[in-house]
Image (cartoon, rainbow, N blue to C red; front, top):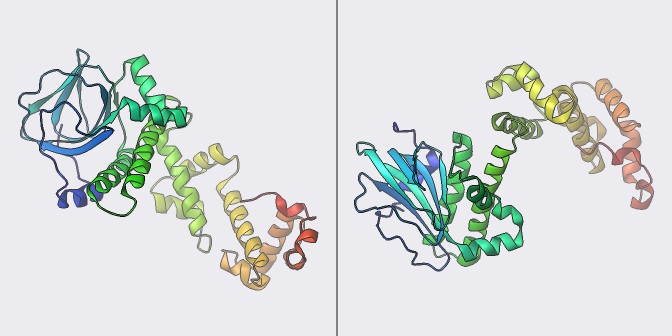
Length: 317
């Protein structure tokens, strides 16, 4: 595999020298888990072997294959490998010109069992691997960056000495394991392409943070470097309404809340992207069944009386 671009998190991580020289030791020193970053040009003395714990590989770089249960698989950037207890395996470096870089995460059966007792969601990936015999899961760059972020956090916590270290480590482990389960589950039960789901989530986040700015299909297409027709399709599939309708509902809800919190009606609509009062008035009355002034009066009443108004309990955007 050719060298890949190092993301900014990974580059910062390397600067901290949190690297461990590879050891042929194939047993755990810890009673619960171990996690390392390795960078090697050669692997000597690594025969086929197995463990009595789970082993995760997070592959970063190298011209490397891995043999698992008598089958050989080439590795690519972003691959997550899960090797269950008792499964024979060994890596091969095909070309030493490119260093073999990866994170390795070992976790005991007992620790995994405790997680699975708290929720079956922690065990989906382990069960899938053991029943399907599929050990390698490919990830796009966005997904793998999310995984690396969680790996970095766990390693830094294990190396640090901050207050609450043990509690934070437990949270980091459960977060990482659950995240891996979720990624694989969504890959295997994909209702919607992951890239499009990510686009939809990024769109809704962006809209929510920029209600006071110009928002249109054209402006969103320019911001996210995709066609406006694709955005319209993704939005309609997820929300059942158009982008314009969603933006309108978000702006109206923001104005409604601002008025309830004491902002003047004549100021609120300008704060959230409405160009003129008449357009805002018509949209507000259509959405909530009353004028902005009427809502202002209701929101000033004592709470029990205001709660009798049913029309504004709907459409919580």
